[in-house]
Image 1: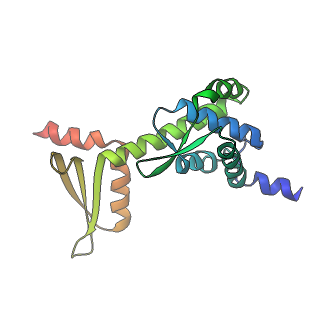
Image 2: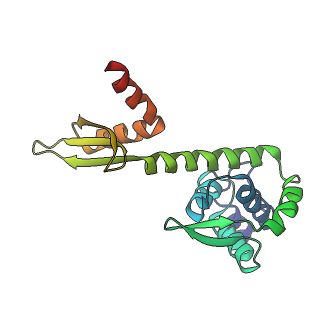
Image 3: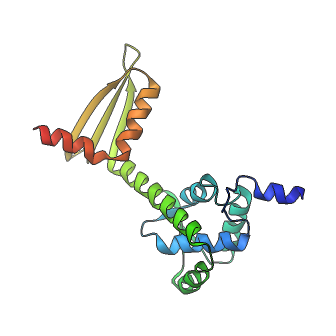
Length: 183
């Protein structure tokens, strides 16, 4: 009983307890996502969303990579999960056995993480302190040689600066659209 509690720690109701199911869902996500799926994102989906226990997730990932069913490739400095073409059919077939709600929840969480990562990559955000104790947050769109737009705002403290940064990343186009619409 003690081991069961250890292996179920952190798993939300409706989550996965079987390592086979965790492996199947890992392969399914790697097959479905169009952008590179990083190990960090996979852990955030499984553990952060309560879909699997931390230790079971990592054990399943290790088994898949050791068996060559999932490959680890470095892309843009990130370790990414790649499902070989030879395993795609099997992954799709096995994934049908998983609860649809779990598959949908995992895919949605993974897509949201990837969207957030894309927005962070496309928009440079700098937060730096002012002499008066507040912070300036500068949002930049475009490359340094071809800057499309740069906007700097003031925040009275670090918590507010982080809140502004996080809200901006939810919808960067909203700020840029408002500025360009006012011109």
